Image (cartoon, rainbow, N blue to C red; front, side, top):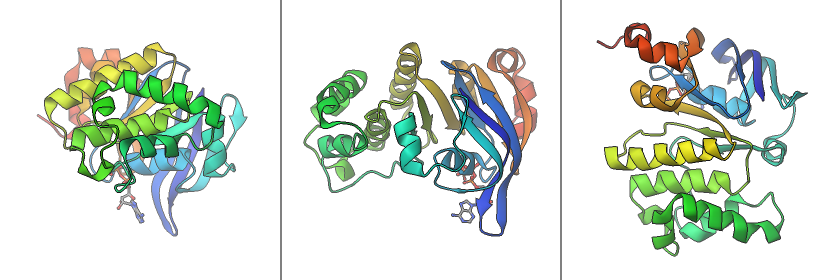
Amino acid sequence: MLKLENLKCGYGAFTAVHGLSLKIPQGQIFALVGANGAGKTSTIMTIAGQVELQGGSISFDGRDISKLPASRRVTEGIALAPEGRRLFADMSVEENLTMGGYSRPRSAEAEAKAMVLETFPRLKERIAQRAGSLSGGEQQMLAIGRALMADPKFLMIDEVSLGLMPKIVDVCYDAIEKLKARGITILLVEQNTQRALAVADQVCVLESGRSVWMGSAEEARKDPKLIEAYLGLT
Ligand code: ATP
């Protein structure tokens, strides 16, 4: 479904990712892990069309999308729940969800909202509340919910569990598994490697903008030291 070939990306003269190739088949969960500054966020922002592609290509459903503007990638079925959530803090939960569906016909909005609220019942209780006044976990649910409003085939979530209480992390991961069961292909960026490995089909460890290990999550689960060695954990 999504294929990166020798992807290079960065900011002006600076290159953050130096040639990353990977394939994510339809229906799978792919986890991108690695230390701070490894290039995980840059990679997904480049797939979304929000960071400069400096070389290589991105194809989606067999088509090269490398040159499409970010808004067209959304209509092609690619959605992003970004790092730091980037919600509209002064708007309500409901208004934030409406903004997420801007690329679709108005007639699709009610059904999409119902689906999001079924996935995250907590948001239903908070529907009229200002997004800026939500807890960190609720904001993460809203960021994922807003991305879902675009009815994506491919969903990218940056830093799923960062700063969240364990109970809320569980809620987010339960939702991710439900989305997978609905056929959505998912690319996760996660610092909590163990958590990502528990749900992922495949994993890639990035270090200084390069892939240092890629393989099935099952293999990594069987041999935890494999990944820990790359991440410098004990
Ligand atoms: P983190 O968990 O800290 O977000 P990451 O693996 O997602 O880490 P990136 O955010 O992709 O890493 O950062 C990769 C490199 O790109 C880092 O060296 C970072 O300093 C640099 N970088 C990120 N954003 C910018 C920017 N807007 N301008 C210049 N350099 C940037």
